[in-house]
Length: 234
Length: 288
Image (cartoon, rainbow over all chains, first blue to last red; front, top):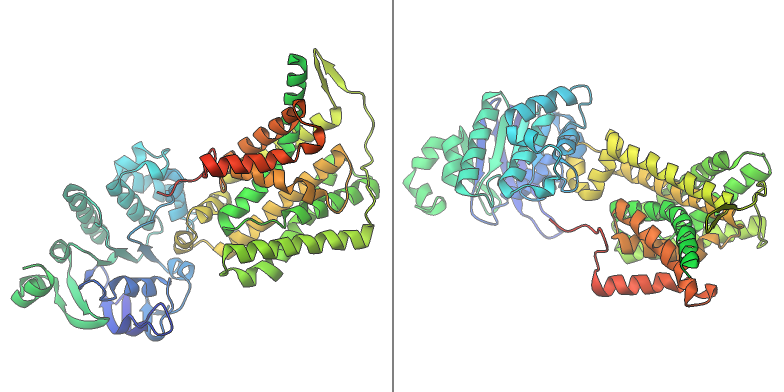
């Protein structure tokens, strides 16, 4: 397993416990989704994994290293790339500069990787000198994912990647995620379009009120009538 | 009349160039640290004294004295950040701003304790003004403006073409995201404190070379520096340069209508107008 999370307890304030013992895992080359209602603790879980929030208890093991409580830059250095739902690009930097910052930890491969990424996303090449603030929502999300890929991560962690995107842009993004998996990168994501997420995922976890409710192969969960009714809008 | 206006404009451009060096330091620290660091005034004076010692005691020429002022003020900036501001990093901006005023008072009084209140001058050759048509330009002022512009160009190159410069701009944009990308934002904060206060020290040397130095040298211009940064848009480096030239020119031009002693009021008026009509300044950042 690339990532193993065990009994994670975390929150933002002293009396505020959002995660109440969450466990999950992501295997090599897998796409794993976390779904659940608002307030389930999905985003909090990803923040703890990425090193943006220290857990109170529990462990997070990434490629054999215990990373719970490590700062974000240390988890990034180990090969974990996190893409936040919002504010995930540097608006005043050009697209080229955003990619350069994406590869900040890999100076020797930065130029080669930037060329590869721009080959993969022609739009970024065309607009490489434009400030990121000039991009549309979908284009920004593409840039955010491209920045994450600059570091050649072992695990890509995506927080609601299709939030605010048009259906066409969201479809393109999901195709990109599938292509990322095909390149050997593991993906852990939470997604508001749960059915779309399950359609491209290998496995999924359902969280409710900060605890594991159910997990299994994504196709099985997508076809479970009870799950469809309660969590997938019928 | 036109001759007077042109002369004042030329003077304003030259004083604006020196002001711009300090304003860049102020605004770049604001962009990363998110509070107005008024200890810039004390660091300007500290840098000016370091440059003065290098020039008058060790006989170094102005460019090297400028470098000394930059390095010493930058060093004091890192130390004051580490000792005073770092423990308050999570406090409200107003708390940090007040702490920065305390740092400034400490540095100014340390200088007063060591050197007294006397005005001190750099050991620079006297030269006749250059007369170009209607304009009279002091060679020292021109040299100061030239050195200020060189400092700005070096900074431009660092910010635009180096990965460290990009990391500083990225941290200013979004420190949390910068950390996720592997940037050591605390290290960047120290670097920004060094550069920002170093620039303040360099500006202090240039101001001292133009007139004289004293412990309150920085305090006397901090309002103009703050006004330049606000006018350009807090956090915007091109804005700070633009704001500094605007303040420099308007301060000089104001002498047509008010006595020179009221020149400092221009900063107050500029801040008032900006906050009333365009709070984000000329090139202020828009939230996107």
